[in-house]
Structures are given as structure tokens and as C-alpha cells.
Image (cartoon, rainbow over all chains, first blue to last red; front, side, top):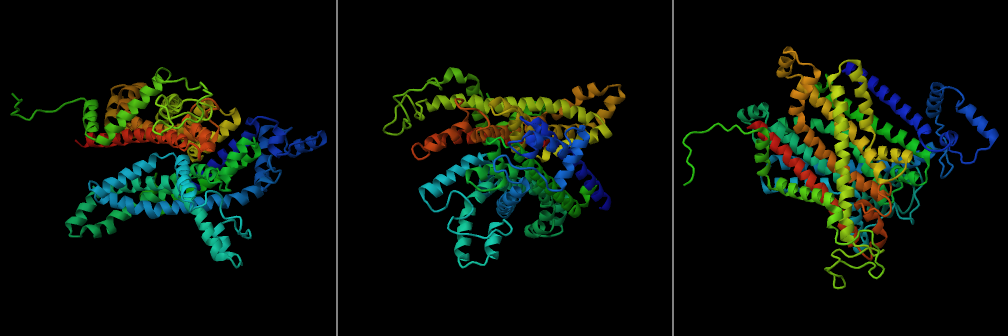
Length: 338
Length: 297
């Protein structure tokens, strides 16, 4: 296990190295002036430009520029946003919790719904229930998420008017900023209208979470179903049955433990897709997260922001990937070899 | 007189025929295949089958409702948009943008993936290990983020997003093909063929490719559904197909302002995207099951 851990960590360092190289080269790849792209300043006069060139070591060779870039990233100097002229790191810190909150609830929902449905579908694959679960999963798997979100808005917000269509919480409620995670902040805050605020925030959360959870849920259903069907064919299941365990006992003691192991790894693999979908969901529901901010950055040609977004999101995805891989190896000794 | 068979005959059909037999037994897969062929034919013949010019703006017929509405015209089955362009013709034309370009994207990614995957799969040691790590990085960057970065560098447009999606799809192809080749190389018949004096190229072209094409097809169908969704999503965000082009995702975002006036102009293009992706997924699932059953029999 220790050897495996070391190898994984070494690999992770390599991946982060490649990522930082990519982010560094973006400064040159983006159109426009390199000094502007790095600093995020719009108007730069001659003396300031010379200062910046010296600060970014642009007069030196690429290796030294890259080292200076790494140094700045580590020390938290990520430059300014073209649009707001605010430090990027501050902006990202404000936006990231909103995205994480949405993604986490969606992932949780996909587990709660997806795993039991997958098990049921695998238990009787040829019955009506099994077939309709598979068909539903197929439909959810094929839905274009932006259209699905629009349909739900059209129905629940415009036609019925029961759920809000945009934002994280109603403008009536003022929640002091604490961690950035809305529900946690409301529970923490010392306010008289906590109940109402919580209710309102949950209402705002419901539609985006359902929309974002649709795809991961269907992936989970299909994955768990296939894994269960696969495990059910194994000889140890037949042995367990032959020894006299009934179906439920076999399912619990031998089936689930083996079938659900790869699910841990699936979280890591799905996370990248989840972030992609979260970006689209945020745009549709005007959710003030990092995805919407990134897409706005394209419209505004806000290159420093795109670079920062790449760094943050990729770091997050890589870290979660590694974490789930290590967890998977921790539970499954067979995976430590590969 | 019906044929009477006394003896059980050995059934030696070609793998392709066996596959087709297993595929044909699944109704949902066949339905998906017909839809798929339909979309394919329409995307090829789009300029010939549109009833009206998809870009012609008729001033007298702005925002005509669909023909099932009392105010609609039978010549315009889905009505017209706010510039008086026929929606049916635009959707037919959009098939070649969304579906056709997705096909081209996947074909391009598949070819490049085959080349790189073969190189990675046949090489050993440090070279293959470095390659792997770079791939791991590319796999972790979310596809939309990658597309956004590419669009930021080379600008928006349908062709540019095609390149972006091709690049975003590439890592999974290379990864899958490399693993498939790795698995093949372990087989005994590969060693036997090598002992007969075959070089790398012989092994690759005569043994490996014929044995992994099934996996390739499944990978390609999965990538195709992703490509359709990505092209539509980028079109919806305004990074993909630009103003006059009637790409389905772009059509949805065009008619978003009219969602109260003409909800069908949002609903129908979305339904088309959904149907196209569903048909691809049905075919992909059917193929997967058919291949599994053929292997078992």
C-alpha cells in the first residue's frame, strides 16, 4: 500500500507539472498582449510596463519565466480579472463554494437514487420493473442537459410558478458570508428568519440539483446494474447459493460488496463530466458559481480569468480523481498492482 | 414443403453475420438503427429535401405557429421564427450541422486516436509511460473547459468547436485503443505470429485491428453521443455555430427570448437533439449486447 501511495503521489506531481506548463503557455497562446494577459491590467503605461516585465521576468528565458509563474501561483498572486479588476484568487474563493455545493448535492442525489435503482434493475433484469428502469436510464442518459433544464423551468417556474428559476436564494434574505456554502451559512448565521431563509434556499436548490443529478444518476444506474449482473455470474455467488444462502443473503454478503467497489472509482471518473454539466446548469439557472463565471469570461475575453479557472477546476478534478483511486485501492487490494 | 433437417448442422457464419443476427433480435436497437439511418440520410441530403430555403426571411410570415395550431399554415409544419424563416427547413439543415458535424468529429478523433493509440500500444518503457501520464492529464480536464480554452485561443465558430471537441474526445479514444491493443498483445496467437517472423506492422494490421474493431465501434458510438451533446451545448452557449447557421443548440438559444410566444421553437430542436442522441445510444447499447451474446455463443 505504501509503495502504491508513493507511486500515485509521484504521478500526481507529474500531472500537476504538466497542468502548470499548460496554464503557463496559455498566457502566450491567448490573443493580445502577454503583459496584459498575465497581470490583468487593462491600461499599462510605459514605466509600469517596464516594472511588470521585470516582475514577470519576461526579459528572461522561458524556463525562468515559468519558475516565476509557479512562484506567483504558490504565493497567491494570480493577477487581476479584466472585467472587475479584482484579484482573481479572491473571486475564485467566493465562487467555488457555490459550484461545489451544487455538485456535491447532485452527486449525493445520484447515489441515493442511482444505486438502489441499479440493484433493483439487476435483480430482475427481464421483469417489467427492470426493463422500465433501464429504459428510464437510457432516456436520462440521452437528455441534453440545457434543454432539460429549460423544460423544467418552463413547467415548474413559468407554468406552475411553484419554484424559482434563478439564483441561490431570494433577494429578501440577507445571509452573512461565512464559508460560501449557502445551507451551512444559513444554519450558522444568527438571524431571526432562519427557517424561512432555509426553506427559500432549498427551493432554489431543488431544480438545479435535479437537473445536474440526472446524468450522473443514469450513469450510476447503468453502472451498478452492469456490475451487479457481472458479479451475479461469478462462481463464488453460485458457491454461496449452493451452500444454502438465500438470494437476499447472497446479495448482501457477496454481491453488493463486490459490485459496489468500482463505484468508488466511478465517482472520480464522473467528476470531470459533472463539472462540465455543472457549468451548463449554472448558466441556465443563473447560479453564481465558477462555471457561469468562466463562460462569462469567454464573452468578455477575460483571459486571466480563463487561466485561473483552468487551474482551479483541473486541480480540483485531479485531486478528487486521485483521492478516489487511492480509496479504491485501499478497499480493493487487487487494484494496488496496476 | 418446408425444409426438414435431420442432422444438426454446424453453423459457421461470419462474425459480422452473427453480430447482425444478435443485433436484429433487439427491437429497441433496431428502432435506434432506423432513426440513426434516417438522421444520417437527412444530414447528407439536407440541401435537397428542405421544403423552403432555410435562410429565406419572409416578412409576411413572422412567428407563424405550427400547423397543428388553428392559425398555422400547412406549408410550414413547424411554423416560422421571428425573422420569418421556415423552422422545418432550418431543422433539416441543422441535422447536417449537429449530427453531420458530430459524425465528422468522431471520425477524425477515431482516426487520430487509432494512430496515437497504436503508437502508444506498440511502444514500451519510458516512452509509453510518459505518453500515459500526458493522457491522464488530458482525461481529467473537463471537455467543456477544454473547448472553452480552445475557443478562447482560436475564436468561436462551428469549425473551431469541431476541432475543440475532436481534441476533447481524443484522449479517451487513445486510452481505450491503447488498452485494447495491450490486451491483444498478451494473446498466444500474437506470440505465435511473431515467432513466424511477423513484424509490428503485420501484427497490428492482420491480428490486432480485426480483433479490436468491435471495441472501436462501441467507443465511437459513445463518443458520437457526447459529440452531438457537446456541439449542441457549445452552440447553445454561443461559442459554436454563429448567427445564421441553424445548428440545433444555437436554434434553442435563438428562440429563448420567444419562450412565452413560441414555446414549440424551443421544444422541437431540443427534442431533435434528444432523439438523435437516443438513437445513437440505442444502437451503441444494442451493439454491446450483441457482441456480448456473440462471444458467449
